[in-house]
Image 1 (cartoon, rainbow, N blue to C red):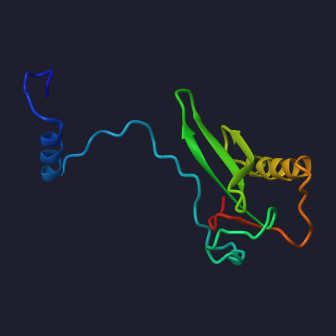
Image 2: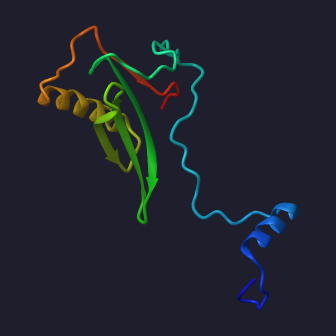
Length: 133
């Protein structure tokens, strides 16, 4: 509007667009990182949405997301120890394949061994997103 010589406050333009049902153009395409697969049986939620732990290596949560860059979309997977709230493993790739998530998990296992806090079999709960890839 300014280029055409019309002076209007941004909030006025936003209000008028809302009232008229007009939306901005959205550049790029929407990236879908996860999709629900009803055919696959979900693992039980052992944490009941309580993301706390009494000690290190008792509860890890994992997820992944994407970051739009100038050249491509980059997917980032991460593993967090809920006791310290520390990212202990992460991975980035331009495709969302199984290797992306496994690399983050392997880094977490390696990092805990390096910190001289290796996990003990039977003590660790690893919680990830309920949706499937």
